[in-house]
Image (cartoon, rainbow, N blue to C red; front, side, top):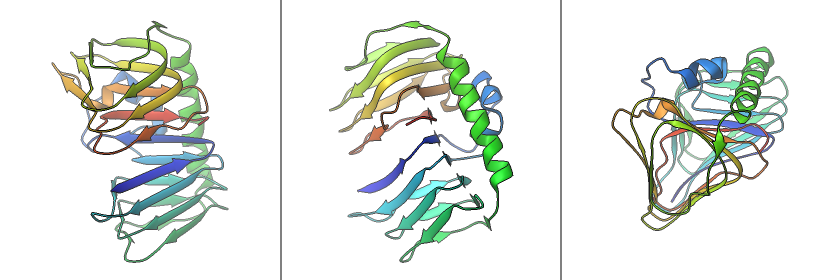
Length: 221
């Protein structure tokens, strides 16, 4: 099992390739976007990248850890990119784990600006869209802004996002994928056009062999 756990006051986690095209969501995120970060912890955030049975985890892209957060990388896990650490943030690279890029310390100015951009984007999208029923089983959706309480998929359930344009999910409670559940992109949908905006304080959870493509924005979770 490979584990990336991020807890604390806020996080942006971009689960998508480094290649990206210009997109409305990416533009709205600004310096908090996936062109800058694979994972960004803001506020009093705690990041743990760890391995278990089957080897370590990898995070590909830059990682940001704002003050006064903390980061632990363990279990033969690797950050494939640079690490930006706030002035009073702390980090521990344990065991045979590595950071392949450069570690930049005293980065409060950069990280605080990115954190402010993340909060602003979350607030912007939270005020848009229309109500939608909770997503708890397989479903296909076209581009749009959907306001709902939960996305909770398990087993072999799939959420298929079909077509070009932006997909925004304003989630007031739970984002949970377990088993072999998947977010599938078809018909021109791309990962940088998919935003899971968690407006509440509940942690996002990916377990088992679940696959999520898109950006998780959770500045208050």
